[in-house]
Length: 209
Image 1 (cartoon, rainbow, N blue to C red):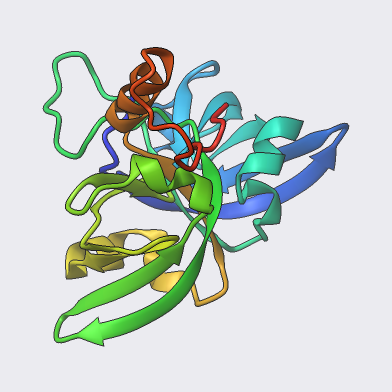
Image 2 (cartoon, rainbow, N blue to C red):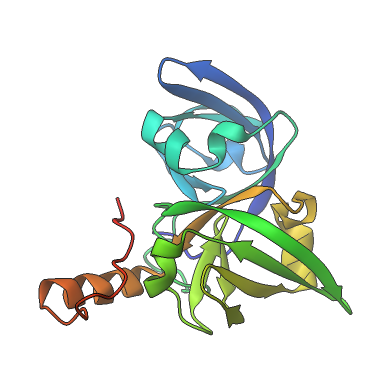
């Protein structure tokens, strides 16, 4: 379980193909605090540490993860958002983030608003039932609030601290981002389906993994 509050922006050292997936090496200041077998969210994707030293850690990306997320598109030098799992005695600062990405979105636009930024993200229309205005969404693992919502895109506002301490400073329109909708919305929609509350003829939600 994660919160969407990014601890550190690491940097990709290498992305090497292996059978069916990739081996990812990330340079980060938190590497020395990790242990083999630990979970860590990389751009919002929950992965397992399979090797580490004081300066870097290594993880592996399976075929399904490569298909559903943007991790297979990473290049050496790219900034990635890192978050370790929430401790049982920790404060819940963002929202419940599982690290299970629902789909790849596309960054459509960035605009500056004083000291702040607005970004527009397009998503698969099948995810629409899981979004609400002022609700939560994880974009590359960052807990953000949906400011405005349209059929297949939303806007979020980014504060200077988040911009400076995450990979948002490096992404550009047209880039892919990992999206995870609020888990509470998933359960609400699933219960509605199973109990027959979902309206006949309504657009069916995306079949989530």
